[in-house]
Image: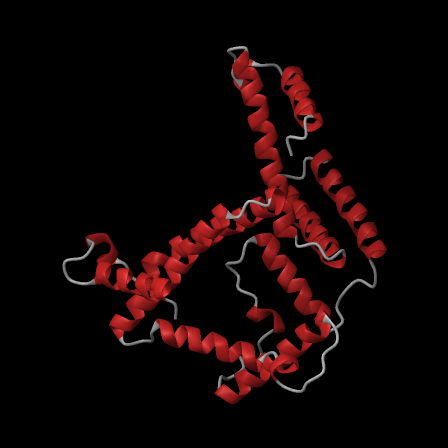
Length: 270
């Protein structure tokens, strides 16, 4: 490991040691779980910013926060005798070598899809060799974590199903299904079918959109996050413009807000 990494590990160990930080000493795997998730999403957002602007200082900082969580968990694990940060690094290095025989061995894989298919096969072989029992009567979808964000879960589920042939043949079929689901939503809303029925139709519509994104090689979670960022920037533009006149959004008409929204678009506030 590098000097800087070793120093990070030492600092974390000091914080956890007697006489260290009371808060750090109280943490467990479970109590830190939410922070790992939060830091991961902040790193995700920093990636989008880096892609848009080319500035990577924030990305570096957020990746550092993710790394801190890895070191924090590993420090707790070392204290408990579960594993060490070296075990974590060794494990992932070995996994990368084993799952890239086309780089570290003589296997010939020509395309990215070939690499992914081979990766899945190697994972199955590793699971079998490790002695892990397959779930009896289980589904191929069981390996997709249910705690994933909805769009990401939908993407992973449909990718799994597509691997065994359960998929649309082309994007045109999905676009037809999209129109169908949109019409069903329209009927549910107009017929006053109730919140539960409308919720179901919206879920179906989103699920079809996830499939369309997959067929178009678009990651839907990333696409929505980018749109969220765009909305934030444009709305902030509206707030700044209103502030110049001593006004707030809630004190403005919809026509005023809409006009400023269009101004934000034309000003490339996206």
